[in-house]
Structure formats: C-alpha cells, structure tokens
Length: 337
Image (cartoon, rainbow, N blue to C red; front, side, top):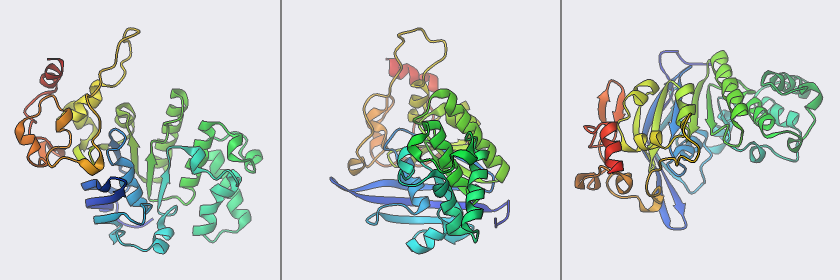
C-alpha cells in the first residue's frame, strides 16, 4: 500500500462518459466527482440505467473501446484516464478490484475455483503455482467457503449462488487491493445470505484498510454499509453527502421517491408499494434541464431550462435541485394530490 492516510487514494473529477448506442451517442455519465481516502466507504444508489455501473467500469478501465471518457480519475495521484490497457492490466485485480453482481457470469465455467482465485496472485505477484494454490485455499476459507481445501478443485456450477459470490470476493481480495468496488454484490441472493455477504465484505474492508465503493439500488443496504453516498439519476449525481445527513434530510425529489418506494416492515398484506411515476429516460434522449423533471411532482418551468447547479443544504451535503425549499412532507403531499 502507498500514499498518506490524509490524502485521497482515489480522486474523480468531472468524469464524463459517452457511449455509442443503437440510437446514437449517449452521455452515460456527466460531471461525476468524488474522492476517497484510504479506509473510506462510498455508496452509489439509483435505478438501473442511472450510470452507477458505467462509472465503476470506468474506474476499472473496462469500458468499450468506442467509449469517450473525459475528466480525470487519479489513483494515488497517477492519472488513469488515457492509460494503456497493458498498464491498466497491472492495476486491475491488483490495486483496484471489483466484485461483479452476477457470480455465475463473473466466473469461468471451464476452470476450477482454485485456479481462478489463484490467477491474480500468479499475475501480479512472484508466488509459485503451489504458493498461489495454498493462498487461494486460505482466501476461500477466509470468506467462509465450507471445506475450502477439499473443494478448491471444484467448478463454479457445483456451488450455490451464495458460495459462488464468496468465490468472487476471494478473487477480488487476492492481491489485497487498495480500492474494492462491489457492484450489486447481493442481487441474486436471498435476504439471509445477503446479510452474511455484506457483513463479510464490511469486515474484510475494515480488516485490510481498503477503500470501498458499494453500488446498490437498495437504500437499506447503503444506509447500513457506507459512510458517504451519492444518488445518481440520468448519468449525474443528484444528491451526495454523509449517509446520515442524506437520510436525515433527503433534499432531492428522486431520493425522496426512492425512500417512499421501499418495502416497510409491518405493512398489511396486500399493501401496494409507492412507485415513482414514469421511467428512467433513455441516455440518448436526456433533456437539457433536470433529468428528473418529467417524473417530478414539484417540477417548475425553470427546472427544464438547464441542468440545476448543486446546492449545499448542509455541510458536505449537496443537492442538484432548484426546489430544495420543499420538505419531504410537502413533496409527499404533492405526490398524493
């Protein structure tokens, strides 16, 4: 590990990502900025298509060749935007690792799990095949895979979904990365296993002093697992701040909508969940103004004129909205009207 604990380990400034789609060029990410010091955790939350995973893929250097990236991504002060694939390959799986959301597609069905966990070690360290295998078994045991020494030569299809996710976590942690990106790591798992996996990731992050970016559509997962959060919509950050601050005062109508839409304990059987009207806009057809305007209950004409600037509603808590004067209670009333 390198760098000071008081300086940003990873720093993203004004990140923009343009992708080619069947409908033409699409600005998938616009003006995203954040920084993480060693040991800090950040959550990205939003519906599918909001730009969360594309942002993560940019950090990993895994965007399509046709993607156009602007802005800056720095790791320990070194610029990653424009880095050659060969040089990125020295970082990927070594200093920056990612846990993907579907373990069955993240794992190669043709290779044993032991070989796949050992691969980053063979690629990025000087350890021998025997040493890498021994370390792979230790990693699989550390992430709670039963009988790791006996099952190291088994194939992915021989494991349950929760066990496969543990294997992908072992792969991501093999080289003790500085930055861990967890992209919806529990989407395909039941609630009990989900809790176990999230606790495991949190424990390993704290134990190894890593920075973590956790991507989720679940506000509950974000609330319990990260220190800071960013709410994304239409490829841009609409609200960000300390997790407690955002949940105390949800300043953006989209954040409020996500909160209202969550399932509630104790609700009567048959109770319908509240939803956010409309759908996420196509990236190729983003409006010139606020991207949430067509779904917002408190929209005004000025919202459609230009992308709103970020307004600080408290220290370190920013909201990209011109209606920060409207409380959540008033917004709920507008929805019900």
